[in-house]
Amino acid sequence: MKAFNIVIAGVGGQGVLMASKVLAESALASRMDVKQNEVHGMAQRGGSVISFVRIGAKVHSPVVLPGTADILISFEPLEALRYLHYLKPGGKLVYNKACINPSTVAAGLATYPGDVHERIAAACPDARAIDALQVAKEAGNVKAVNMVMVGSVMKGLPIDAEVVEGVVREISRGKGEEVNMAALRGGAATA
Image (cartoon, rainbow, N blue to C red; front, side):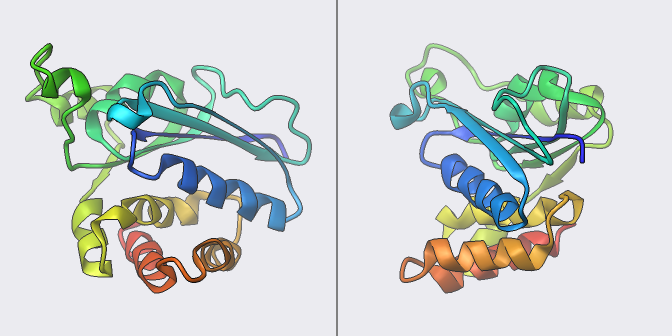
């Protein structure tokens, strides 16, 4: 199998790294080669976080090059716009439609673009926006947006959903397992 490239983007505190871990461990459990890499930036201050997960029969590098991502999962619309150049032609963008002001906006140094959803639609007409925050609330915790987003792309992954569910159970055992499972299934229902 040729490498399948996933880019996950968000802001610090949204669980980008946990989502990346779930996907990487799910691929490993499926006996695939996996390479993972992340850039934290100013993550602790609400800054941008991006993670690459590459899976396949043999993967040589953890870096997803611009224009090669099969899926871009974004936990926030502005981050989707920021990293859209990673998508390959025909690649899939799934993003959480809830906006979070980045640190520069919170500090009054910049303004959040009011037309962010329109700009995404113009650049990627097939983009799928989901209300991951609402789904996470219904699952029992707004912090479960990351599992909602993972669930929202499960059907498009070269990994069985049951494997992903097993990994989520294992990773969250004793730490919000039922909420994470409800969020994962809620995300899958949006697909």
